[in-house]
Amino acid sequence: MVTLKNDYLTVTINPLGAELTSVRDNASHLEYMWSADKAFWGRHAPFLFPIVGRLQDNQYQVNGQTYQMTQHGFARDRVFTVAEQGATAVTFQLRADEVSREKYPFDFDLTITYTLTDHELRVAAQITNENDQRMPFSFGAHPGFNLPFGGAPADFTDYQVTVAPKRVYQRVPLVGPYSDTQHAVPLDLTHPLALTHDLFAHDAQVLTLDDRETTVMVSTPNDDHGIALTVAAPYLGIWSPYPKQAPFVCLEPWWGLADDVQATGDLETKVAIQHLDPHASFNAGYQITYF
Image 1: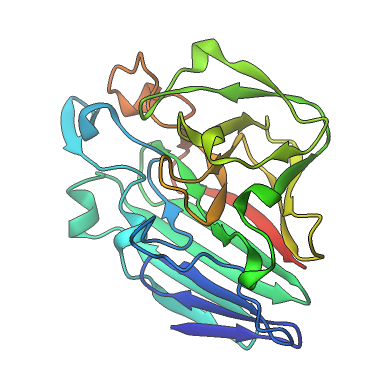
Image 2 (image 1 turned 120 degrees about the vertical axis):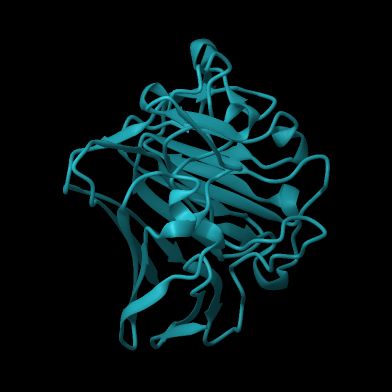
């Protein structure tokens, strides 16, 4: 495990998946991150690469060849190398190898950098295409947060999600595990969204952000604690398991989507796929404020 610490927060990150596992307030010992209780969901905050969501039949094609890949890709299950480390910052690295090429036939360099400043944790990802051809990919993050935070006198349904800018967003419905991009529906977020377990009866609430900088805050009137995630991404998922009444919620910046209900299986034309030119780099990031 890698630990970052300043006057306010202590952060723990596992090189397995470069996964954030704990963010604890130094004064109150309040724990913000989900515990990865396998009875509900056995992860804390995985990264999603080289796909987001599920592929139809868990497979896709590139250049006429079929490859198998399960939901959210393989990066979350690979051990990253610690490339650089200091007291309040660390960079993890994952590079293509024989194992990854069996699932994804591209050479890549993925780095994840965490930087802790006061009450804020910044997460920066860089993906470099090390091929002489264009590389299709998706990327996402999936941090889960305790509800209540550290045992506050509240439960899941006492929390709300506030989104800024306040506006009506387009929501991408999910049909089973697949995106139905042709039937997006409006979601009025000019007012806070009350969290209920039934909100996730049809899986995640997937907001279209159109790469606009957006802040999503989870808080309760019962106390002063919460988190705020700021990102400029194409999409953001809000998720908690259903019908399990799990005591956590995930806020998920996505640079990609699960396969569309009308997907052909061709990775090049996959819905919301990113493309990276030969030897070019893609940068994505977000920051989380803990209060």
